[in-house]
Image (tube, rainbow, N blue to C red):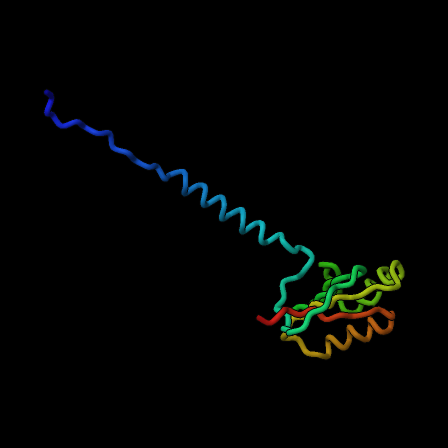
Length: 132
């Protein structure tokens, strides 16, 4: 009889490749989250407890906290804003402007854009975030 101790092979789990996989997954999700909504300028929107659906025929107008205006993510000076919106209105008479305004700007800037929308006979909707 053989009473010698048998040597069992030691089992090892190699986790070196798991670090690489986790890094690539993290990188993928960071890049994917940055591309989710490319039509919007980063703003802190005011909050609202009620929400409405967005009409189909819309353009996005954004006002940043340093009073830079964007029409469909393209920077536009305030003086040229009306001329920039006019072709959209002529192409679609039932146009609606979705206004993304930073919560820290003065209401006077929103009223100025409202005047332009009224002059062009275009509906204007203020975008908000939902309260949680």
